[in-house]
Amino acid sequence: MTASLIDGKKIASEVKERLKAKISGLAADEIPGLAVILVGDDPASSVYVGQKEKTAREIGINSRVYRLPATTAQDDLLALIGNLNESPDVHGILVQLPLPGGLDRDAVITAIRPEKDVDGFHVVNVGKLWIGSDAVAPCTPKGIMALLDSTGVELKGKEAVVIGRSGIVGKPIAAMLLSRHCTVTICHSRTRNLPDVARRADIVVAAIGMPNFVTGDMIKPGAIVIDVGINRVDGRLVGDVEFESVSAAASWITPVPGGVGPMTIAMLMQNTFQLAGI
Ligand code: NAD
Image (cartoon, rainbow, N blue to C red; front, side, top):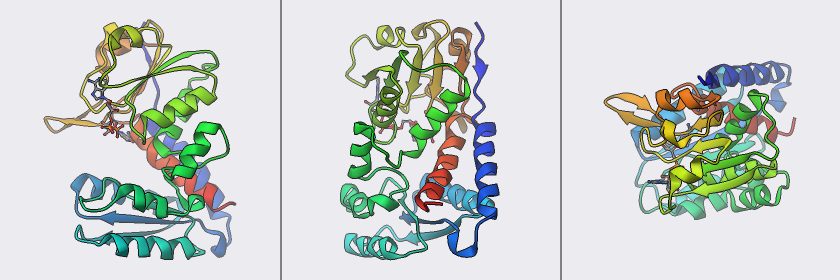
């Protein structure tokens, strides 16, 4: 079998076009507002924040970026979040992670009002996701679900194996697949016989951060494979999935780049729109 490509770039661009059309019909005081806080000068974080700012502008969301020095005190950061919590024209607040050492990530994320937590990382939203209540869902897993749905394959009853258990990808995508009635297994660095577990899966989500970790011999023929990994190898972006061998076995596969990455930003825009309550 040669897998069909799930074109995240195209699907993300359709999401953004739909949002742009909706926003263009709004009155000035209804425009969704997104506040992004970047602390320090991590180059990758700067690039991500720049992409978010540019996309927000393109589709008509009001975005404000607060670029703070790495030496920012925790109290000053919390005070800024407090102000944004109270600001009526800010509907979504995002603190770019990772934060520089010395800042308490959990305290910072918890300071964001859950109704403005556009990344879905606040403990209230994490809890809501797991109990299946309406929540702001984290952008990358939300994008993955949209990619899976784009295949038209029924998810109910499928065996899904998620490789990676981070709070931003592995755990939330497991919760979302579970709520769509998949039988979900989460693998991680201490999992025994991981290739055997992966071979059971109708759906594999790889979120590890190790280039070409998932190989064709770990894939059940016809499985759907979602590659979340972004790894830089010799100046090139490479996923966690060895594309050639895996696409020979899978039915559907996401490329890197052009798969999950563009969906993450599109879902951030969708979450901002959702939080504006329009
Ligand atoms: P993380 O480092 O927080 O978590 C990695 C997970 O992989 C851990 O849970 C760990 O248990 C697991 N792992 C590590 N070694 C393993 C092994 N040998 N076998 C099995 N599991 C192993 O990473 P993350 O934040 O979840 O990100 C994962 C990857 O996804 C990274 O490459 C990251 O850049 C990428 N990412 C992409 C997007 C996107 O928009 N495309 C968004 C977030 C993360």
